[in-house]
Structure formats: C-alpha cells, structure tokens
Image (tube, one colour):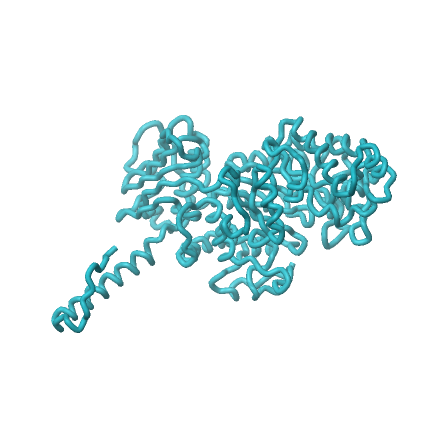
Length: 544
C-alpha cells in the first residue's frame, strides 16, 4: 500500500512533474486493478491464505503421486476424480520417477483444526500437507478445484501455482435435504454429496420422514416404507418410494469416503402422518388441516415403537447422532386435549398443559437416543425442554423468535444456526422468481444474503462460553418436484453457504462473484441446471 504522508496542493507542483505523477497514478491503478481482477483465488470456499506464483504446474499422465501410508485412500480418491473429470490417469508410486509429482505429506500441526491443510506448488512439484486424513482430503479437493477450472491442452493441464494455508471457521458445515415431500433417489443424493465434498461441507442432514411420506426401510415395521412410503406432497397416490437398508449403507459409505457425516432425522411427535397411515394404533390424532399429525404421547406402546425404529436407525447411521425433530407440534395436537391416554398421562404425571406433555414426550425419547450412545438433535422448540445440554444439539431455525436462540444459549446447549433467513433454500432467490413462497410475505434468500450471514446478524447476546458448532442450510421440498428445480434452488447458493461456513477471511461479495464465475462452468460439466446470477435469462426458472 502507498501512503501519502504529507499533502501537497497540486497547484504548487510544476507542470513537468504533474504529468509524471498522473502517469504513475494511472500505472499503479492499472496494475492494481489487473492484479485484483486476474489473481483472485478460484477456490471456494476461500482459503485463509493464498498467494499466486508466477509459474504453472504441468499435470499429465506421466505425473505421479507419492504419499505417506496414512493417505493411501485419499490418493486413490484423487486418481479417480482426475480420471473422471480430465480423462487423465496417473500412478501412485513410492519414489520419484517423473519430472512432475504430487506429494501427499503428513505434517503434524499443533493447536489447529484437524481439517486444516497447506499446499505448496512449483513448476514440478505440488506438495499437500496435513496432519489427518480429513485435512488431506480438504487439501486435495482444493487442488482438484484448480485442476477442474483449467483446460486440458495437448494432454496437459497447466495449473496456475498457488501457495495455500487453510483451516475452517466452523466444525459443522451442513446441508439438509427433505426427501419426504419429494423423493430424488441415490444418484441425485450422491451428486449433492460430491459437491458438498468439493465445497468442504461436512454434515448431510437427511430428512427422511414427515407427514407426506416415510422414506426409510425399517425391518421390524415393514409397512412404514411399503404403506407410509406411498405418495408425496403433490400426489398422495404415487407409488411407494423409499431407501432400502442396503441403499442407506451405500450412501453412508459414499459420504464417509468424502468425510461427510450423514445425520438421519426421524421426525416426532409431530409430522407423523405417514407413519400413522402405516400403523394407526400409534396415532395421537391431529387437526382438521393436519389429520393424524402426531404420535400419541399417552401410550407406552408408542415409546417402544419409536425406540425400536431408532435402534435400527442407529445401526444404519454410524454418526452417533439422531435428529428427532420436535418442531411445529402445535399444528396438530388438539386431539391430545380430549384423548383418554393423554389425559391419564397428565393426571398420573401431574403435567399441567399440552406443551408440558410435548416436553415429557421429548424427554422420554431423548433418553432412548442417549441410551443408544447417540447425541439428541432437535429443532429450536426443544430449547423449552429440560434436556441435558451435554447430550443435545439445538438447531435454531425460527429467525422471528431470537428468544429461542437466547434460551438455548443461556442453557448451554450446543447450537447449529440454520435460520429461515437466509438459510432456507426453498425460499426464492430474488424478486424475479415466480414460483415458491411469496417473497412479499416471506422475503427471499439471495446469494448475497447467504454469503454475508454471520451469527452477529441475530439479535442475541452470545455468552463467552457458548458453543456455536456452525451453520446449516435447509432445502425443504414442498415446491420442489423435479431434479431441475432442486438444482436451480441449490446451485450456486451452496457455494455461498460453503464460504460462510468455512472461510475466516473478511467478506467481499464482489470478489466472491468473480470467483464464482468459473464454478458455473463446472456445474455445466456436471449437467446441473443452476440459476445463473449473472444472466437470469440463460436458465429459466423450472416451475416444478
């Protein structure tokens, strides 16, 4: 930076010097704008430190990988991705036998996240260092972004060299997909996982059950999938669609290879209509608008039924976390007031009101989850309960109720921030969209809103000891029927989410937009029907 220490009025400067000064000003302005315009790091999310070198690394089929034994599986992942995206096959060897090599090196880093990594590049060598498998994977995904954004010419990818040091802002960098309302299947889920991995998102929250349909095979209760899996949000008679337990194992393994933890959600005690269609004996009734919306909290058999379901869920998902919903119970619990089982429960346990019944239900089910060795995850309604903060993670979603977040903070819960604004990806992206929740009523969640989100935008007081695990975006699918619509609502907002969740660098939305342009080409390569923020007419909005 050039700092002018003493101000000299330009009228006092001789003309012959004025021309030189003006030329220098123009020159430095040109150089600065050129550097800023062309030397932006193309990696998303932006690393903590990145410095461009004035050389390129020539990647071709003669390039070899040399790696420490700890990183064999990450080396294999890199080989597969390079072959998939650039049609270049490279070998893994024990020693240098080529003019160009990629070194995957173990480097113990103290007092930094295990997810951190560094990259040092030169004309002949790329050295990626990390102190753990996940750190190495993050380094590889950053390098792959550089490779994918570089064309193959004469069978060589000439990658601009960068030196990078990087570590995450948050440990929880999440995306939730609702497949109860509409089902998309393994292929689409895997593609989403691929992009989550590329963007260093590491928690896939899978909303598999709700009022619309039940999408998870439970061996002990087969009718949950066979009957509860019938229909969706727009067609209650569509054939049953669900994931078998083998499907689940396959996807969990696929995510694990990408260091993504899959967190299942079994929603309760509300949003239970699909389960109640299959096993009506466990229904707690509902309301006119939401029939059979709840499980019955007054029946002991319900707790055994749900515990058995959670036991199978626990076996399928090794995350040691189960999300059990807990939201919007009041939409359909009016039958509880007259149900004989609920009335007997209230009398026996001296429970004063229906909200307290809800908390009683949640306490019992939380005990089941904890007894399985799992953390209890729930929406922010659970902040009203007396669950153990050490065993519970609260997901703050009701941005019109910051008092719920404050309550969770004051009680010492671990917290994931996923407020409707800006983290609901089913909401419109701008005022030009015509289908979805009306932006005049619900506002909209633009890329800029997502990119600029910080915890400080929520009007609460954060205690010094608070445990904000991270952020998460939620993609509800009431109004998302097709894969095209799913893509359109997710891409490129997922890139802004990644930057908010990972990067520690100061925010600069204009530079982010410039960096994003190269990623749109990658979406095209992957046949993703993205929303183009630079030319909205290029990809029209799918209405379904």
